[in-house]
Amino acid sequence: VIVPENGLAGVYPNPFSGSELTIQLNEATTSALRYTIFDLTGQRLLEGTVSNPANSEYKIPVHAFGKGVYMLQLDVNNSRSSVKIIKN
View 1: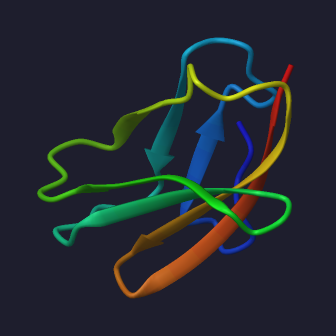
View 2 (view 1 turned 180 degrees about the vertical axis):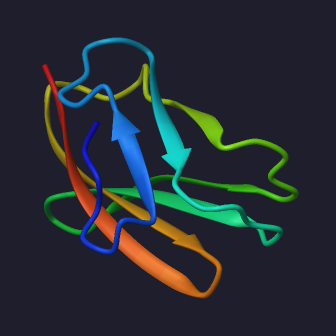
View 3 (view 1 turned 90 degrees about the vertical axis):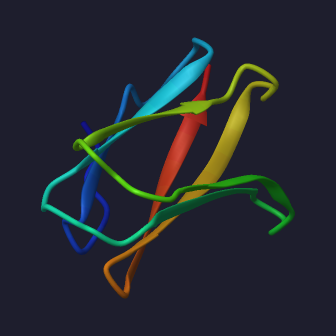
């Protein structure tokens, strides 16, 4: 499990080769979880929002991504964190 710099959440598996990533929140939240995946040029490739988080794990579909390095940005509880993710 890769944990972004502020410890907000864990992301696994990383590196990944399958069709989804899992975000595991490390703290309870009642606000929306927003995620964005960028390539290394800064182009936004995927974004989504979980409006009413009911549990601590969320699946992100990544089946369309080619092999490479990406940045996953998470916004929740007025906090932002980023983590590098790798597709094999």
